[in-house]
Length: 391
Image 1 (cartoon, rainbow, N blue to C red):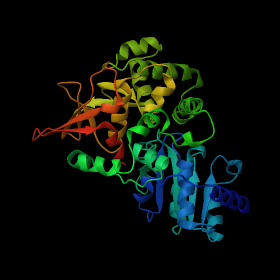
Image 2 (tube, one colour):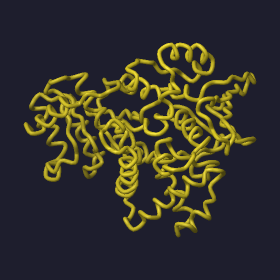
Image 3 (spheres, rainbow, N blue to C red):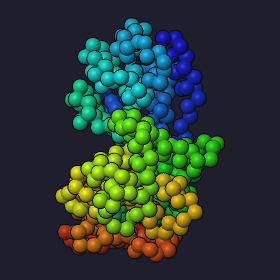
Image 4 (cartoon, helix red, strand yellow):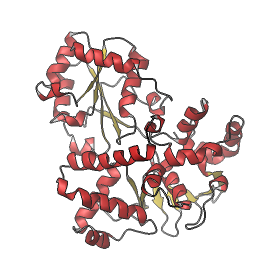
């Protein structure tokens, strides 16, 4: 136990998050079991340590553990939790919980057998607690940790403390919001950097970002998809090839039959692979209104702009990168569909968004988004970058 405390103390001492994540203030920390869900590289470990540092400091009542530790190959998580409580423990932070066999059943045992213990754990975005973890589905509060928004990236880059805005606030008060931000900085001076490398927190590390991101993308497929979904390693190349083909074919509804032929598998398997890639936050699937998986989507697009620059380092992305930014910003907390009548997007069934036309040069400096209220037909023009202030 003391070895775990020493590791915890070292990590807390060396954790100095550069920006306060918005999710930290949204979680109800009074809940006894909290799951933090997110894709690889998004900063889940740092988030746990930031919580421990801000709320508990050097107190031994809170302890961070990682299921990578070989200790748990020979000791049960439940026995460890009981030992922790007997040493005065109250809050157990469990990182990479999926590395522990039958982890959801063991968490349930801890919950029932240790009524005075609070557990916060991280898990992969590929896992659906409601569908795959019935043991804890009724007791856990799940929260999604996303990558940096453009707002968080700006706060980090400029030492400002801009707040987030709701979609309605942005649509109806965008002129006042833009003016208040422009009083301190020029957001477009930072926008291209965000599009290229601002989504994943590890851009702050002293390593080549693109190479690190490519490594992370491969780990998303090799571990978060193959390991968690128990897919044989021999199919790895097919899933990677599928991701590449989806990335380069972004003009229309995907041809599932052609994709199945290209990677030599069935249509049903292709749709399952596409779902896994979406769950891993590598792509977004956009559907017409009132439709969803397992139907074929209207459009498949990379999940965030950093991925696009990693896959196409020498390609002029034009309007595509703006469209990826738009879908990523809105899909976090809103429902985004393709309009059946045009290439426009319908958001929350209330607003119709029109972006720049495909194939144009796509100048970020003058890119606005046209937003129309479907019911009142009221139309407004807002800067694209302002959608990065939604969280």
